[in-house]
Image 1: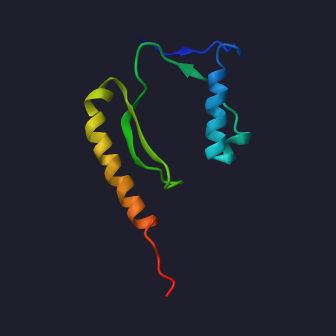
Image 2: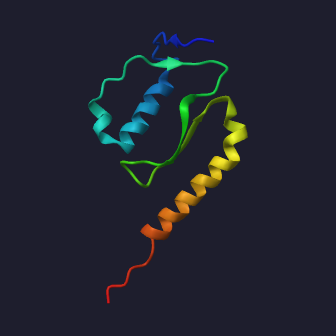
Image 3: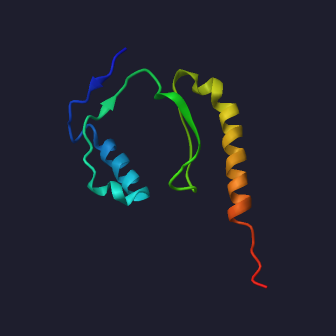
Amino acid sequence: MGQETLKWNEKEHQYLERMKAGCVNLYPDLANAEFTDYYYRVGIRPFRDEPRVGQDEKNPKIFHNYGHGGSGYTLSYGCALDIRKDVKKYFENECRPRSNL
């Protein structure tokens, strides 16, 4: 199973532009970025060398849980528990009522 270069077709691949728009909405600095070398994979799940599980370094309101590849189902429960712990900790610290007394 290899990676194939996407043969660009505006009509068939509009979802990539929607994905890019969503990313720009979260990170406006991406608006002027040049997006090249779109890739797609068929029949496999996205993966990374190591799954990304945890809080975003730049925007602490964003939590990541992806890149598990074919082990996604197997790892889903444990990774979800890890993320739950991180989200709970974030909200306990950030959303705690503060007194102005």
